[in-house]
Amino acid sequence: MIGYRKDADAVAGLFVDNQIHRDAYISEEIFQLEQERVFARSWLYVGHESQVPAIGDYITLDLAGSPVIMIRHTDDSVRVLINRCAHKGAGVLSQPKGNAGRMLRCPYHAWCYKTDGSLLAVSLKAGYEDTGLDQSPASQGMSTPGGVATYRGFVFARLSKQGQSFHEYFGQALTALDNMADRSPQGELQIAGSCIRSVIRCNWKMYLENINDTVHPISVHESASATAGKVGQEFLETDPTALEQLLPFGAGYDFYTKMGARTLPNGHSILGTKFSIHTGYADVPSYRQSLEQAHGESRAQEILSFSPQNVVFYPSLATKGSPQIIRVLRPLSAGLTQLEVWAFQPKGAPDIMLKRGLTYSRLVFSPTSVVAHDDIHLFESQQASLAAAGNPWVNLQRQFNPAELGAGDCQFEDGNNELVMRNQHRAWHSMLMNPAGDQA
Image (cartoon, rainbow, N blue to C red; front, side, top):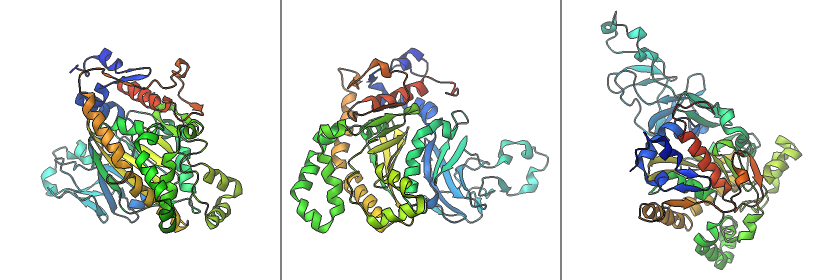
C-alpha cells in the first residue's frame, strides 16, 4: 500500500476529473487522513435540539472518532462538549441519553463541571494549592469542538479550529433546512423518538454517491416497485401512504432526466430542484391552509412546491423535505459505515406528516425493508470486489464536460448526470490535498 501520508503525489492521483481510485474506498490510511482533513474540518451534524428539551438533558455520540456530548445548558442553550474529563481523560457520561441535572460529574475521580463544560469542583482541592493547576489546561474544564452552530434546531459542530465558518461552508444548502423547518406552521420541528440505526460493510463515499444516483432505482429496486404495483389495490385500501411512496421507485430514466439538480461548493448538492419521487404525495388541504396562515400564501406555495429527492450537506448528512427525513453517516472505518435515519414532525402540522416520515423510513431505509436490502447487498459487494485485481478505477464519466471543472455552483436539468457525484469527490480531494487546513 502506498504511504499516502508521506506521498503528496499519490494523494493527488486518487481523483482525476471523472474517475476515483479504489484506494479511496478500501485504504485505512486514506480513512485516517479523511478523519483529520475532511471530517474534523467540516461541519458535522450532531443532533437536533428537540432531543434535549429540558435543562440537563443530553445525548452522547461519536463524531469522527471523538466522543461528544450534546447537552441543554442551564441558560437553555444547547452545548457540545468533548466527552472527556480534563483530569485524566475518562468519559464523563456513558449512557446514550439521559439527564445530568445542573452539573456533570466524572465517575473516575469526581471532578465536576457545569453543563457548559467549565470546571466547577475538584476532589481533594487542597492538594492542588501552589501546584499551578490554575494555569494548566485542566483548569479550563472539558474541551469543546472548534466550532458549534445551531440552525433552525439542527446542531452542527466542527471538531477542528481550522476551517470555514458555518455559513460560508454550507451557503445556499441551508435553504433546504429552512424548507424543512417552515413546513411547520410554528417554524419548528420535533424529532420522532429514536432512529433506525444500522451498520453497513462499505465505505461511506459509496453510500453518499448512491444518494445522488438516479440511474440505479430502475434496476436495483425493480422488485419493490413491481410488487407495489401488483398489490396496489390492497395498499390503497389499507395504507395509501405506503403505495404513494413505493410506486415512484418504478419511474423510468426519462423521469429523472427532467427533475433538475444543482451542485454547490464544498460538495453539497440538491437533487430534484424541479420535482422528485416525493412531489406527488396527496395534498392535505387543512395543512396547506395552516401554512398559508402562518407564512403567507406565497411562502406556503414555495415551501410545498420544493420537495427535492435529496439534499446533501457534505460530507455526512442528507435531507428530504417531504417526507421529513434526514440520513446521517457516521463512518467507522474504510469498510464500515453507520447509518442513522431520523424522522421529524413539523410542530402544529397534521399527524399524516409524521406518518409519512416514519412509513418511508421503515419501507425504504430499514435494513430488512423491501428497498434497503437491495442497496446494502450491492454496497457490500462493491466494497469486497474493489480489493480484487484488475481495473483500479471507479468510473464517474456520465455526461462529463471539461467546462464543469472549477464550477462549484452549477444548475442543470438532467438528474442522471454524474456531476453531482463528481462534485462530492472534488470537495473530498481538495480537503485531502490540504494538510495544513488553510481556509478555503
